[in-house]
Amino acid sequence: MKEPDKSMRESDFVSGFARGLKVIEAFGEMHRRLSITDAAKLTGLDRATVRRSLLTLAELGYANYDGKFFTLTPKILRLGHAYLEATPLPVLIQPHLDALSEKAGQSASASVLDGSEIVYVARASQRRVMSINLTPGSRLPAYCASMGRVLLAALPEGEARAVLSRSELKANTPNTKTDPGELMAEFRKVRAQGYALIDQELEIGLCSIAVPVENDRGQTVAAINIGAPAAHVPAAEMVARYLPLLKETQTTLRTVLR
Image (tube, rainbow, N blue to C red; front, side, top):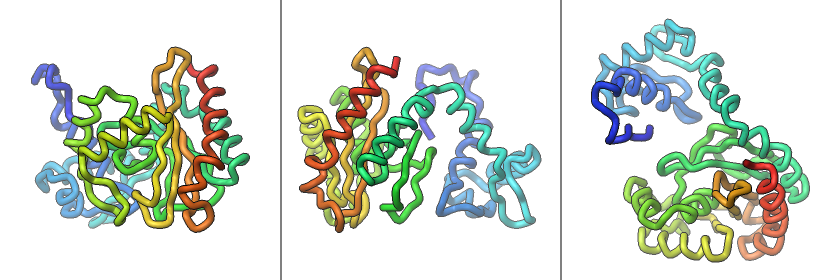
């Protein structure tokens, strides 16, 4: 969860609300059911606070409780749906992403930067290329994802370095770059060439290539990528195969995003 703005007055910050959101964020693909103890460990909050938050969610219909475990209900989607309704980006990008995926014969995705992570806002899937199931709302660490590197490369260097300082730079595979200096050099390379190429840094067997999505004022508002199994499309072939398609979609989106 993003830290509150330091300029916010203490009297304006609702700590109970912030803790409740942190409890919601503890649920995920690997944590579909949580006990109070589980949620306390994942959030770092005390059991009493977690218990009150979870019981409140259950009372409001956002969670089910069987006496031991809590699970989120479909009502929780209202929170994400509010973002989708208020932000036209996913709706505008989706048809172009569908066309890109069809032309490439591979899965294509779009994401935005949220702190040290990328959040998927749209996806067109041809086949599952990762061990996790990526859908709108899924999150990945920005430093080792192709879309993340594109988005970090678009930031001023000081901001990008600050994001890295807040990131858990772990080696997901033997290929993962984790040295901050090396990553900053990678961002400069991405900025210069206009795309990011990942060769099995996020997960063994997955290669991906991404480009920034800019609005009609030249501001980077998102990133799009194509992911492919390394066994079928080695990283060395990704640029020749997919970069022209990505750039074509990038150009089209620039004319429709305001």
